[in-house]
Every structure is written in structure tokens, then in C-alpha cells.
Image 1 (cartoon, one colour):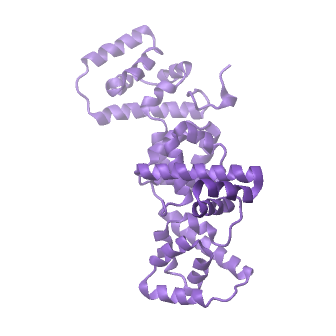
Image 2 (cartoon, rainbow, N blue to C red):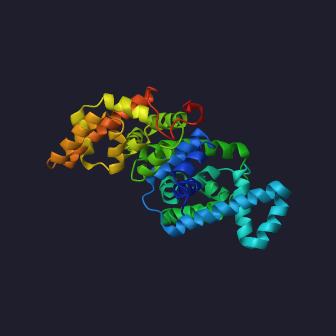
Image 3 (cartoon, helix red, strand yellow):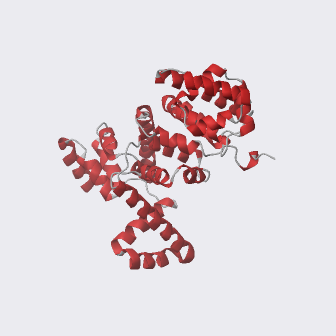
Length: 335
């Protein structure tokens, strides 16, 4: 948990809550927050149970602290939290709440960057700059970064921290801006789809069309490969069961009957029933008969036929011709 950034914790929380709840939370976030969390969800491969529980516990404690502050101010929150969590834990929670509501010092944005990556980055900076940054960070975070520096650099940085005199706010602001610009250029080029894109796709399948469009447009501009990977998973063949019946009929009109037969070769009974009930009795009987006598087919050929149907669904939805359950939002209800 100590190594997780706040963005990573948010990603773990949303994954654990499930796609429907996550989609609802996305509606309350800014585009920048959604983009950062989406990238982290995509990067998460495996989340240990203990980590999930700790994230839930921290989220609960932060929510409780916010409620206490809203009811009686910070002093009231301090008393309540100390009684339930102890003095040390209460102090930690209150500090996090202070940061959330904007009482943050210089370089606090660095808290959301992986310590190992950040240590590697700081090795390229002057020891005086590094010492200034560490002096303004949380001691625990500063210790992690210091541990990752080369041995010959550690002592130099510590000496400079110990002998540091007052630095003007203007100089600190200037250094902070430069560091932020360098970090953006360094880390934005290293993001990649290393797993977890399915979780992102599941969440985006439940957000409204406008939100999904904005997120994908942003990702396409900044992380095109990642965006393409997510897009492939956003609507899969099995999701056809969520297509509204009249819309399904429009889709089937654009698909060759042979393609339907091949696509259904490895489909679930639920998907088959969805397609059959939106075809004429004669057409459905013909496909059922063809499936009965169809020999073995390579899975890759079946998946190709399924993907063709999926592409038609996506195109028609983008054109506003069809409706997928859970994707229209309150403004797009059928009347």
C-alpha cells in the first residue's frame, strides 16, 4: 500500500466496486481524472486481496474524516478520529484530507508518481534540486526516493538538505514548473497497455455515450495504442444480448446469413436465442439446420465472423441508428 499512488488506489477501488458503480463515479470526475484513472486501470494486472481491503479501509476513513470536518470542523474531526483510530492514524488521515481539499505544499504532485520511476528521473537532476524537492515531500515518500538514488549521490543530497537555507517561493515555483514539464515529457511516452484493458472496457460499456466518446478521444490523442486495445474490448460479440431488439434487426439486415452461421458456431445459447428471435422463422430455421450439419471450423475464422458483426454494431451505434441497453443514458430513453 505504501508504494501505491493515489491514482492507483482510485483505480483499485473502482475495479473492486464493479463496472456499473465505477461508471457512476466517472460521471462525477473531471476528464483529466478519468484519463489518469483509466490508464492505471489498464496497467493493473493483479490486485491482491489485502491491497483491495486496505484501499477500501482507507476510502472509508477518508470519507468519515470528510463527514466529520463538514459537521464540526477539523478539531471535531480530530477528536472523533483519534477516538476511533488512534492519534497516529488520525493524523495521517487528516493530512490526506487536507491535501484533498487543496492545502498542499510544493511538489505534492510528485506523490502520485511511482517512487522507483521518480528516483530514476531525479538522478538526472542536480543534487541541490533533488534536496529541495525531498525537503518539501512527505518524509516517507522522501525516504523512498532517497533509497533509489545512487550511493554517491545520497550523501550529497542529505548534506544539502541539512545545510539548506530559506528559498524564495518564486524560485520554488519555477523549479516545480520545470520539473512538472520534464515529468510529462518523460512518463507520457512510457505508458502502454500492459494488462487490465478489459476492466477499462467494462467500465466504459456502462458510461453514457458522451462520456465514453470524450474519454476515448482524449486517449486516442495521448495513448493511441492503448486506446485501440480498449476499443477492441469495449463491445464484444457476447454483448449482442444487450442490443435492443429493433436495433438487432437492423444489424442482421447488414450481415450475410453465412457469416451469422459461422459466428454462432461458438456462441452461447443466450446469444443464439437473441439472434434467432430477431430473424424470420424461415431464416432462423435455415441457420439452425446449417449449424447442425456444419463441420469443425477454426476458432480464428469464427472470431473473424463475430468481429464483423461487432463492427457493424459499433458503426450503427456511432451513427445513432441503434440502441444498446445501458449505453444511452437518461436522455436517450426510448419513448
